[in-house]
Image (cartoon, rainbow, N blue to C red; front, side, top):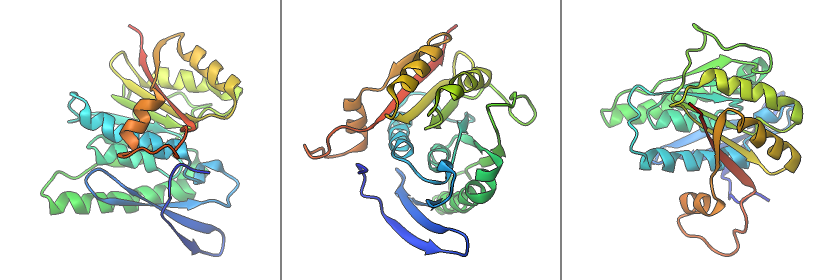
Length: 244
């Protein structure tokens, strides 16, 4: 059972049963994220790790002393695009990436529609337009080089990208190529296989400082009023920074 009361509306077309997940960002704008929950690709569903990491990053960026002007963000394994769109809403120049099948089937449309929603709000408030782009990326086989990708990125985010041991080395190589010593990297994942999580953290420690965000802090950021019925959050977020 999710810790969230998800507001969804059902839609049907000839191929998929689609659900719309609505997410209110900090300025009051509501993102409308399309899912395809009956597809064979887990990247077309919004998972708790994406929701919690998106909530956390809003609070983190708002409370940070770091300026976001002209800062770049890249999301790996964007899926439906929730987290990347939230990063974009905070003013970051955001690149959302995933496999071609996910980009074509769901990510591209979600970003186009919600970027329009975000920029309508920006125009109404006489603010600068936001910038987000979508790119195809299989980080298990692709070396990330200009002009398609322009590291280092100031922020790198990912959720539920690590769910099996064979992905770990590819992912660590990828974030190493995308970052420098100033980059902030946030990885959210649901607790599934302790061995995978432990192996991932140890692999990152070879070149990055790794800090696990305390669950108590996540609850403080995510829920305005906590009650005893919420219980534990089944999501972990790790903050990584490359060693000098």
